[in-house]
Image 1 (cartoon, rainbow, N blue to C red):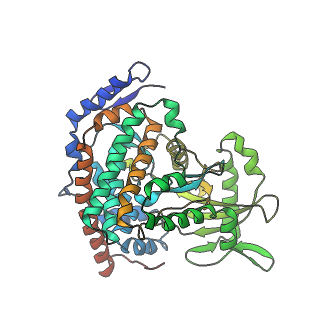
Image 2 (tube, rainbow, N blue to C red):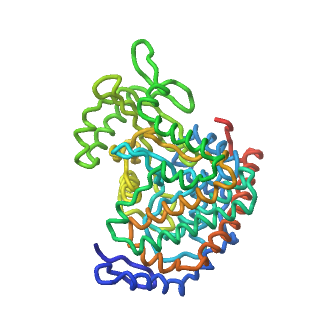
Length: 463
């Protein structure tokens, strides 16, 4: 393990610095950036117009899908937050920032935590979206999480007290678990897993909430390639193809499909070597463009059916364009020339167990890159709208612990733990930030709605 740098402090060599020494480094950072200062948010006078930031990002996106993105963002302040990480990245960089860096998710809102199937077919709970992953200040992920907790509470009719308590709980869980990880062995950190059933059993002790959670977990267990194959494909004139449901799902024409298939062949070469032979037993027979999410709408996102033994043995793949991380202008450019590689390496580093089919390739004709993963591989997330007020804080705590684990896989946790300390100073600062930035988010959402109503931008709602 080599040295790592902390701006204003110097280089730290884990081999020659004991855990207490690294923890003291974190305490020294408090002199540079007091923990209370992280709670501050005041929009600077030169803050760019959010619509301008979104439009700049949309310049590289498919223009026919941009109105769908805006339509989904208009639904509520929470969906606006989901769709505007580019705006929050700019805002985070304009405020107090520590030099304590780790690998960031970059878009750590509540719905980017959830279940998925491991290679061993265990249902795990973890972060599950890494489009924006990049090294950066640890607190940027925490700030996005706590803001999403409070704005979700507000958007779903829960009281302000419930939202603030849950935001504080997420920060406290992050702080306390980072302290525990600082005392743990390196391999103990790396091996840590969150079983989805156990996680939800702890998070949703409210008896009234349990049936909904059990239903969600059962649904996740059945979200497999076979289920997606049945739902998304059909046979037309004796030929299997994806259903045509424009603009959300549209089969690709033959030429583009051939290019995509060639790209998948290149991507297989970036798999972990033990999975090469596994992937090569499948043959892609159908492809389509598929619109997903909120923030991803407008990027090139495709799906593919690959057949193994026969049509009872299918593999459903998602192929997503990887553009530059929204954090890059502020946290620094990626060390990887390919954004597809950036996403894959970041995911493999942060997740407890990654998809065995996770790989990447460049699409030279499109001057972009993409990454590949299984589609709907036992993926699920909590229903925030249906979540009872008593369950929000326990769920937020789980997300805070998971984030601490993900951050600690990338760098030694002791400096961050030393900075956070044992008091609730950091927790209160994160609650303060969540309140201030949730207010900003609601104002920004209203501004976006006004921009649509005035005709400045076009939105298509309910799609």
